[in-house]
Length: 171
Image (cartoon, rainbow, N blue to C red; front, side, top):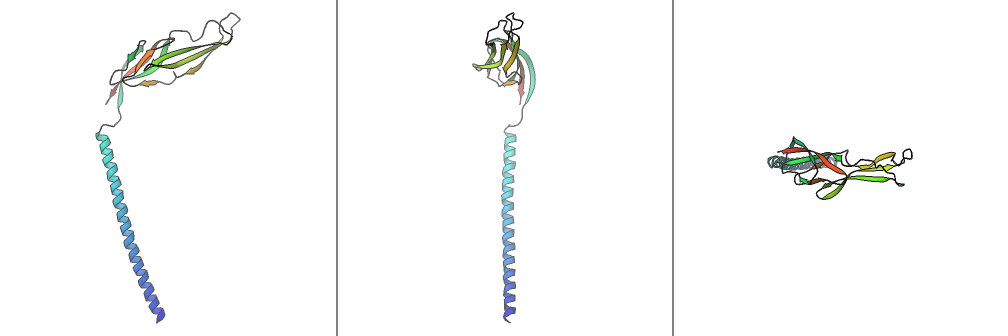
């Protein structure tokens, strides 16, 4: 009789525990579902807000190619792409000095000196006083420089003008 009471008690305990666990699991699932829906709603609201506020990508339309020698400002609603320089001096020097010589090609952006290119000359060709080897030691000219509206640009030392492509910023 004692074992029957134990079995019945044990079965009631298991049933009670299972029922509690199932209710608890359902409650956890409901709570997780509610939190997931809140997060999803917040993300959808944020996405709609960003789309509505105009934070979307813009496109560019080509306007003109120009040469800048004096200080000029990028107009409002435009961007400039600096593509190259037109030097006002040779890359090499025609006289030889024992340590070689360096020639810098400078542009000015917002009043700041930017070394667009530096060329170093070394060597003496056939003993006639002319340099024999020139190497570009520093150059940022291989990658374009994008200038936003309001930026100033001017040619500097050893630069006749700066080659620029102007683009219109389309909303």
